[in-house]
Amino acid sequence: IIYSIAHGFHAIASLWVSRKNDRQSSNLGTNQVGIFDHKSTGVLREYSDFPRYRTPQILANSLSRNLPVLLLTIIFGPIPAGFYTLSQRVLSLPSIIISDSFGKVLFPKLTDYSHHEKSLQPLLIKSTLGLVAFGLIPFGLLVGFSPPLFSFVFGNNWYEAGEMARWMAISLFFMFINVPSIKAI
Image 1 (cartoon, rainbow, N blue to C red):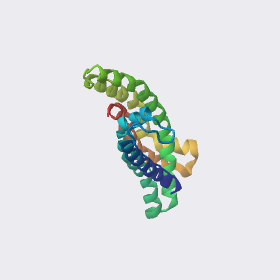
Image 2: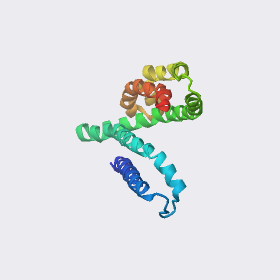
Image 3: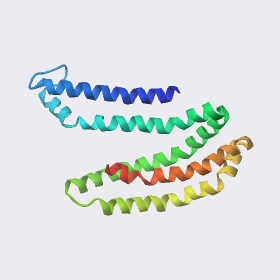
Image 4: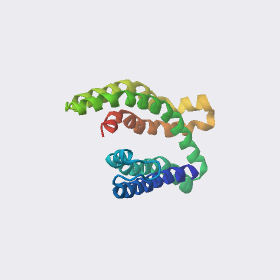
């Protein structure tokens, strides 16, 4: 609950700061306010849409990641929520590390294509298909063998977490391959 509240607070604070900066930058003109001079306020004004669009994304992402744990705890109790949390952590960490690294390499190429007015579609298709090929085997193995794997690694009591991981692997696979589209946006 605290983790969810922290992300929600982060999203609300980001929205509040961006709106405050919008009000200040519209009233500034060429005067200085605090540490910002007219040049930096121009940059703030030029890129003010970034926090405005990013804040709802952070809030929605926080809700979508943490709502299942809250609902499982409320409806079924702490044991299924624990199984879900273990499955999510074990499966998502390698996926996030690989997809974030891929996204950091892909983003400059997408930016370059965009600045030179080249079509992004071929690069998006090629990179998405590359991630499909890269992720098909590991995610396929997770779908097929998560329950016995979880039992072997964490003990027999965690077989149910492996069942949850089996189904979560399908969702995580699609989150894994959507990185090019997210970076393009």
